[in-house]
Amino acid sequence: MDTFKRLEMLRKFDNELADLLEDEEYKQRKTIGLIASENIASPLSTCLEGSIFTNKNTEGYPGKRYVSGTTNEDKIELLAIERLKKLFGCEHANLQSGNASIANSSVLMGLLKPGEKILSMSLSAGGHLSHGAKFNFSGKFYNVVQYGVSEETEQIDISEVRKIAIEEKPKIIICGGSAYPRLIDYAAFRKIADEVGAYLWVDAAHIIGLIAGGAIPSPVPYADVVTFSTQKTLRGPRGCGVILCKEELKNKIDRGVFPGMQGGPKADMIAARAVLFKECMTKEYSLYQHQVVKNAAALAEGCKNEGLRLVTDGTDTHLVLVKIPENIESGKEAELLLESVGIITNKNLLPFDRLSPELTSGIRIGSPLMTTRGAKEGEMNRIGHLIGITLKNKSDKKVLDKVKQEVDKITDKYEMFAKEWNPTDRGTIKN
Ligand code: DSN
Image 1 (tube, rainbow, N blue to C red):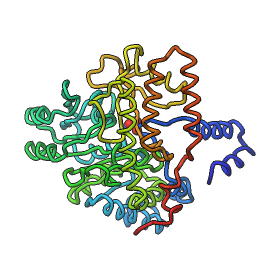
Image 2: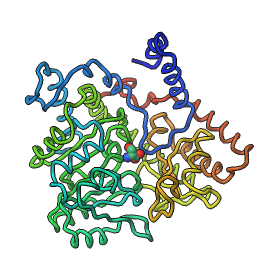
Image 3: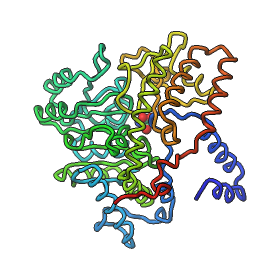
Image 4: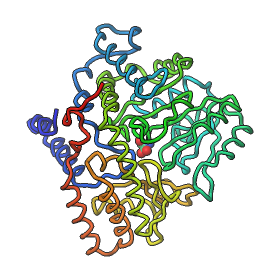
């Protein structure tokens, strides 16, 4: 149902919520969205999210449900799994988890006993809280050792990872996370995992769309397990955690998800992802993902030309980590200042950060959402400049007003989902 029809129905019953829906639609349209984990969900998948499939209980797996009447839902789940296998060349896939943190917890539940050892990247180096942060399920129930990045290059030091792995003999090694802008050497991680007899798990939540579109290399040939969410670069709706794994781990992984971590999955969520995976195989999708990478490089260049310093001095992906300049006290101040001119970012810990996670010394920005709206390198470069101008002139109302006017003009130029990325508009669906 489109926003207009939803609004019409809501207005008859709940004005408060109708106002908020209307305001959200306006806000998303009139701001430059740069949060690296956000995107605009594909209309093909949102037409199934919240559809009639939401009425159906499907506890269990296709052919082994604990309820009856699941014929269509079985077909859809099997189709989604087949599409995942084709898209990523994996041996097995599970897409029942309600989100990627549940998928990540299910991997631990399926492969490890409580107290066994995890080796993962620390949060400040770009890891994720579900990889063993002390306040998360993973940190409370498992024995966690972590690696960071080199102080000099701000990138993973693979010899340091090997040293820790040999000393600590983890049962599982995790790479990938939420704030690492560079490519990861999966072959080197595989070698270390084999040397110490550990599973290799790649959390590809941020970069999975780039992988699906062939814009960066895939971890699937190297990893025992790959997990991801569907709302980031993949460009699906929020929610749904996917686990890809080797055939030999199928039963452990499936049991880790159900009954290990959750009960019945959402059938409408699975249906929406099934069509999304088909969309991921189109030419438009691949072009989009290559554009995301080019746009992130242009955004990084724009920031650098304004004198801003970047973690690792750039990016290989969709994501850029900006160090706040000296006149700004924290990432939090930068985030609020940028929001005041209509540029949406998030404060982010940097490697070796001296500030708390509530303040931070950096902001994280990314190109997926504005690329979905249709922006190309020239616009992204300009947006990088606007970030620099805003941060450098935090007390100059005239300058900030001018930036705001430019943000208005930029956002007016674009639809929420550019026609060029929609395979049904272009009529070129393959397969
Ligand atoms: N992992 C968090 C992020 O990267 O923003 C939430 O999805």
